[in-house]
Length: 321
Image (cartoon, rainbow, N blue to C red; front, side):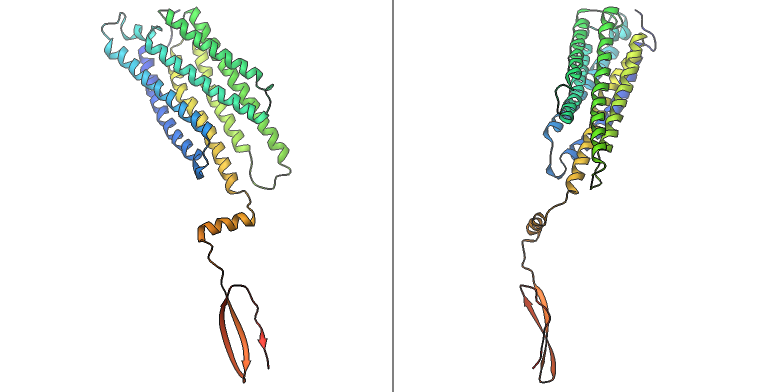
């Protein structure tokens, strides 16, 4: 099936430009995530591993896209039959297969993290049975689509290839919306149940809002990609390349919000008198307390103020003859 929309080479250049801009913003978000997760030396190692893994995958993706653009527009511009447009439409190119494999892996990591959060919040394996089945479907359709591309030579919009790609996108959207919805619903239930007995200002609503925002942001990218595939429009190249840094940004948003909420809760947790005293002893080396007490005496009709230093508190006394 012939593609519609902008020429393939123009779509590649546009997508690479937009991906580079979003990738730069994701680097900024990554640095903020690392700072929030390691604040007060209370690092969250699983979240750190996920953040670093997302950065590695998105970095590798943009590097492969740069190499692919250089190959199609410069290296094989005059030697590849059909020119740059035909080069970028060839789904059997190694750079095309690698960049899509990276996209599938990042999708699996992102969806897997949401499912894991559902399990932690619900504390039930029954709740995540359906999301796990959808996650397995995402993995199967994604890697099968890549294998099919490696055995084909032509456009991605061929029916045998497009059906696997569309199935992958549909399952990804369903997994993200279902997992995020279950997670948000559970947090909302917890917030409603404790709102009447809460004694502090701590609340889970900021985390809930960020979860909803990240799910909407992620879905807002996948829906246009699905529509473009259905219409055989080359806009899917732009949207899917933008999806890599957007996935990282969406999850960095959640990680930062969770870390800030945790650090705020830790800093506002009431401490006992013994904990405060231990903290003061580490800071001031337990210097002995000194009380300056004034004693008033009356001797031979002469008033004298005697000032002394004692290690325990005392009261003012008047001695009379």
